[in-house]
Each structure stands twice: as structure tokens, then as C-alpha cells.
View (cartoon, helix red, strand yellow):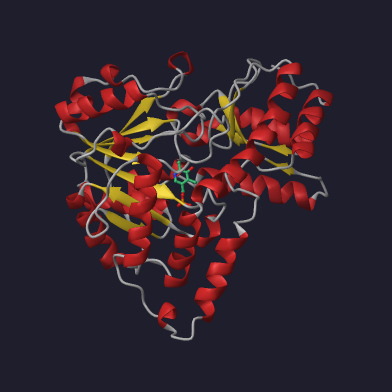
Length: 393
Ligand SMILES: *Cc1c(COP(=O)(O)O)cnc(C)c1O
């Protein structure tokens, strides 16, 4: 057996892997598990997108079944540019400012590999999507977790980052609307981020996987590129997983600074082969009616939030309803010493599975994440079980 590389040795077990194991055990014991642990939407992708995939599969030219181009289908890149212009008022050059991805997770990781040498610094807001931390470990980067604290509405306090950390930092990764806290960025935060990054020569990675999972109809999430219109110092990552429930399809894209996009393409073309062309064609169908599709999905999550949160409040929990994302970030009772201990006790006594905050980085401890991935009835049932088992804040 070969020794694993230092990269692998330094990796923690993927945080959510433990959850899958807990769920399997409960199911084997015959428990009716309510799984609110993973961020894995339970909705079906839009019918029209599924039909577009069928059509592309049946296409007699067979061209769709061949190796795709590394930089994606030109028609797909054009559809992305059109959508960005309609959705955010941002003009993108489909020739050099857009790159389709096999899901945004791979793009985020490869972007780090493309820009970080061992020891280079990356600032990652924390708590965060766990894959960020794993990817930075693989890149052997020096990671600084910028805290997202409740007292600051989970917005990073950039001016509190130590000077020596700033000197070493090459990249900053932000994610709004935020997984797992549900926080959203204000215009003034994005403006400040832009200035801060330019001043410190740090390049911005913006992950907007949840920009169209808006639970409050008055809230409209923005693109960071609206604040960096010349794409001087940023790249944005987008995903079809959450807004269209297409997570198994593996489709996303990066867009922004053309040099950064070219660097990402260079590493990608040595490691993979772009997205199955039939899926890129279905992606065009998704973008053509993106607004209607994402509104329908957001409506489902909004109803679930409005079923769950008032029940939690009635049961004595101190919880804020999220305006975006499919997550409720819940502070654990003081009687528990860790989020792991609480989540384990909860699944043990109620069969309700939530994600312990500690799995989302250094600043996730003290919370658990509840995903709105079950029906309103099941969510209400989950709170009922918690109440009956004597859980309260
Ligand atoms: C789910 C998620 C992703 C992953 O998206 P894929 O396109 O499915 O790889 C990226 N970022 C965040 C914050 C997520 O929650």
C-alpha cells in the first residue's frame, strides 16, 4: 500500500460523512428518521429542464455524447452571459470571462490549486461550506478563518483581521447568502470588501450558490460583480444545485476576471473534461426561465421556513427566520458542551438529524444547521418530537 500524501493525511473526514453514518444506524434500528442534516434539496428539477436533457440525449447527431470542449459549449456560455445581464445588470464576455464547471465545488477547489502555493494565505469566512477548508488543505495553503459572529449579523469584520495574516493572504472567499448561517450581504459590506481587497492586494472569490434561494420576496440577492464591474479583482462561482435542485447533475460556472478564469481553465484542462454536453444544453433551458423556476422553488422553502420557525419559537428557541438559503442556524442549549453532543442526543432521542455546527469550521461551534429539505408536516413533526423529548433552549 502506498503512503498517502501529506495532502491526504492532513484532511479531516468530510464533516457530513459522520451524519450519513448516524442516519444509517438509526434506519437499521427501524427509526423513522427526519433527515434535516445535509444540504441536499428534495425537490425535483424543473420539468422543462428534464425534457431538454432527454432531447439532448436523443439528438441523432451524437455530438452531445463526445468529449466536451474544456471551456464549455459556446451556447451555454452565451446563455450565462445573457442571464447575468438580465439578473444582475453585469456584462460578461462569454469568450473569456465565463467557464462552465462540473458543479461549483470542483471549481472552487481547483481555483485554489491554480492560485495558491504551499504556505500562501487564504481568508475563508467561518462557519462555511466544509469543502472550502478541505480544498485549502489540499492546496497546502495557510488558512485563516474569518469569524462570522451573531453579534455582527454573521458579517465578517474585515478590519479586525490581524496585520500579519493580511500580509500573507492572496485570496479571500466569501459566500452570501451564506451557508450555513443564512446571512445576507448588504451593499455597503460588498463596497467595503472591494476596497479592503484592493488595498491589501487580495483577490476575491465570491460563491453565490444561494443567490436565487430568496425566502423573502422583497429581498433580492446581488452579485459581487455588480460592485466590481470591470472584473478587476474578483471571480464569482455559481451553481445549478440549489436554485434548480439539479445537484446530482453537477453543473455550475465561474465568471469574472479573465486572467483568473484562464488560470482556472488551465488547471482544469489538465485534470478533467468539462461538463457532459447534454447537461450543458439542459442548463441553457434552466437559465432561459431561471426567474420563474427559482421563484417556484423559493416559495416551497419559504413555506417550510414559515412552518418551522414559529414552531421553534413557540417551543422556546431563540431563532431568526432566514431571508435566504434553505438553512436555519440554531444556537444549541447552554446545557450542552458541544454541537456534536447536542446533535447526537437529538438524533438518539427523536430521530431528527441536524448538522453539528463544528463541522462548518472553527466558528460553527455552539450551533446546529437545520436544512429545509422535508415537507412542512415533517418539519412541524420534528419540533413536536423535540418538545416531547424535553428539548428546549
Ligand atoms: C451546495 C454548495 C455548493 C456546491 O455546489 P455544487 O455546484 O453542487 O458543487 C457550493 N457552495 C456552497 C456554499 C454550497 O452550499
